[in-house]
Length: 204
Length: 204
DNA sequence: TTTCATTTCCCCTAAAAGGGGGAATTTTTA
DNA sequence: TAAAAATTCCCCCTTTTAGGGGAAATGAAA
Image (tube, rainbow over all chains, first blue to last red; front, top):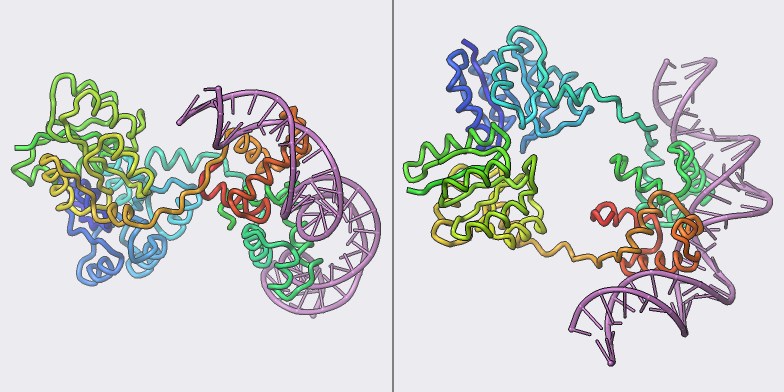
């Protein structure tokens, strides 16, 4: 018998999970919490084998919550549940102690499989998640320094080098240097291309 | 007794819906379809009172499917279900014949309420959806002409006016005119701001 | 058919950005 | 603490944008 806790704020999804668990004799759902706070309170009294955790919660960031729970109760297995299918996020949650990752588009059997797998101290990734993990890295872009980001945001807001320099109390040549640096480090020819790249890659 | 059909490709959600419907004696779920195609086939044999339709489907665009179904079977009420909370989308689906709109974060009672409301030929919007609808319009932006969009895309790709002119076999002055026009119509000072606005508002 | 919007092209000047260097001073970080 | 990275500033010069006008030709819609 595997004891479960669910952290999920969408009633539709948590009802779905409950229905799936009820059909599985080996699974016993101890309760459904809508927030991270509720989970931490519940854990003071009850320790499940597995926590199925939505990482998009209203109160806490799921990534932090995962780490918190793992620090307090290292023996509990955490199965992350998310609509998000970004490689960086999946990696992060695994780093933070999750034993598995399934997407909300997962089939029923996948969820049951995942739970049964993680209690055996084995990792589990849903089909779409492992596909994402195996995709080649979206060519890691160079990172912006603090100052560069600051300036880039102002450029995107339509300020000229002079205006930015005035706001930051530095010389125009400084702003110009940063701008040229950014063009060079992202290998683009002009501001238009830089802004496009920055926005589509969520640099700003 | 209200007869229902569900079109939803996420098992977690459809299981949740099923569980909710089972608890309501007045509701009778005739079946759950994962695709628009399946729905259209099913409708040839069975006519529900209400269709609960996810508008993010794998095969069809939910907006089109809604219109299609309404054209074929005008008496069926359609309740749109979506994670999407954008005013434009909600308006569109209503135009296409949906009687109501609920978000996937809706509470259980909201879904039941919604179904009972739409069968009485009354519209229903979930709490968060009606909040969205009542928000002031995100100031409708002027639309780009075909040529302007074409040029804007090339600007965002880092091409200069001269390069664009060469590609389009027109004079630089023409490209320059379009560029100036766009700056004026969106009331921005330079290309950086224009690109940012265009991307964040999905103009390109 | 007659507007109205779009697309095209032209003039002008000033401002801003881009491209090549180099170099001193702080901050981080290894 | 020493090396690396970030921030700051400077020179040169060229290309590109921006801002102000105007105007003819095409296309679509009323």
